Length: 239
Image (cartoon, rainbow, N blue to C red; front, side):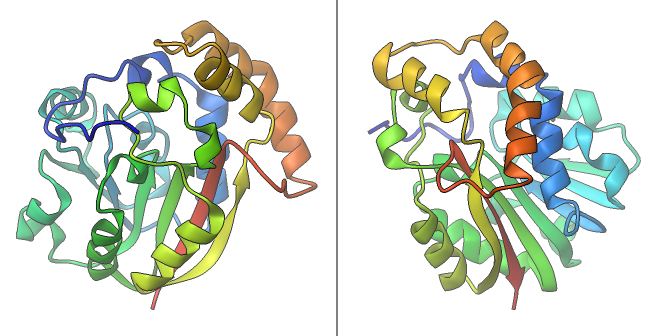
């Protein structure tokens, strides 16, 4: 199991290597579209790879990124945007004036798995989201898929569906959606992380999968919900 990383600095190569996966990111955001609107808080916004693709869907966005080195890039990239405010704090330390007004949605894409006390973060988000608003989660699935690439970016865990649903419910959310995502993506992740034990993300391979694999996988999963997948995508409604 990976050692928990210092949240104020991020050394992972994945954000740059996987930053231009337009089809994959679009698939995630299109799934979240019914709930991704109004005033949004994104926790673990990184360098804005996801944020930049949904700003035209929302009224306001508070982008929280505690890693100082990433926040500098995030602020330079999106801080000038009229809809955007940024914060280089852990969630519990975000200035009160930025969170005084409730949010319509809270978004975490490939972030919750980095946090040791994920239950505490979900409870914090429940306090920030208005009743009827949503928490939108995208996390890696299946602990048996945990490999060298997970360790490389300091994943604390990969999730099982029942575990994620239970944690969302315990935090006060009604689970509106929780399903497997990206069945075909399991094979390259398994090969890279469990068999080859790679220590670097393959940017070219990721781009090829985004170009050819994602359209096929998305088409298949629009017709049949897969029993397993590389990730889980979930929506919880704030009660």
